[in-house]
Image (cartoon, rainbow, N blue to C red; front, top):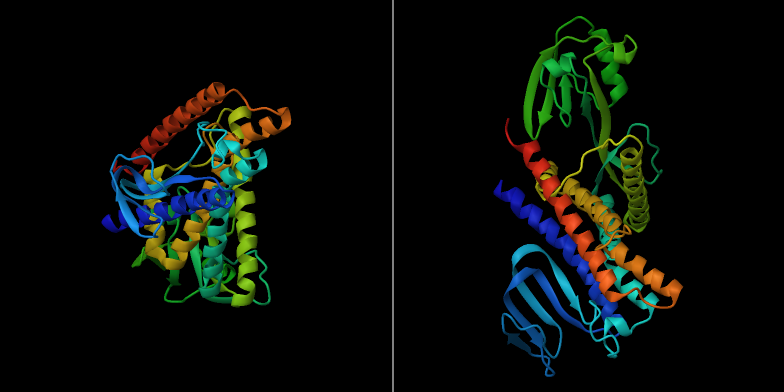
Length: 378
């Protein structure tokens, strides 16, 4: 449990700090002063800045300004933040203020966090594809340059009321052997199960690193058009790697595919909410994500890198939704300013962002409550 918490905060810190680093770099590139870059959230543990002699000088715990950027370490280990001069509408005419920059420059500064999350995902996936990234193999054509190792068959779904359900097999179990025979492809395993129809069969699976053997009898399944089986949906997986000189391209391609999948997922969720007033799929908050991070970490470092990359893409997509308080909402207001030729009333915009933030916090509380109910023992 402690290891899960540590890994979760490490992943969260990486995702948030990379996001904030994007804002920091682009703001500095356009000559905008970054007043503070914080590791973690306030209250502050310690803060320092570099003086003109390029020597570090500490600053008071409550000090908000310094001659140069304050680098602070804070008590709440939830990522970090950047404080950009003029970001909230103050000092709009000062030369080093956010508000003094053109619309497109301000859009670039705000969008840089999302861009860096996508870059991080591409880097992680590229590293994974060099050392070996877990991929689903069945029904997928791979490049001739791909190298595949560690093929295995994983249970993706268990049919209620089936022999597999009665034997307590679960999604995520890796089928290691059946009657002492090993299978690395789905077709061979399914053919063997049909031969064993009506006969007790020993199935050994790996569950979170621990072997488990159950005895069950394949039966004719209506869901499988009368073919004999134990009532599971299977996926064939393996570690896919590429030479380093092409891995970056496949990494970028996977980021694009992930982003499209996330966008389509949100579209389906919103569509079903509007049309049928039903919520489709699972939404996880911090507690649920921490649980998933722990489960993924136990599978291995490659799985953790891949999951972190997926989270980075999800954060990028969510952050760029045109919703108040999110980066996408702020970009929307800037786009309106560019079209109208003048900014939206600052008080009106601030009120809208505050309402959006309150709604997001309420949603976060509800999702966290669902997470707790999901993992709390019955």
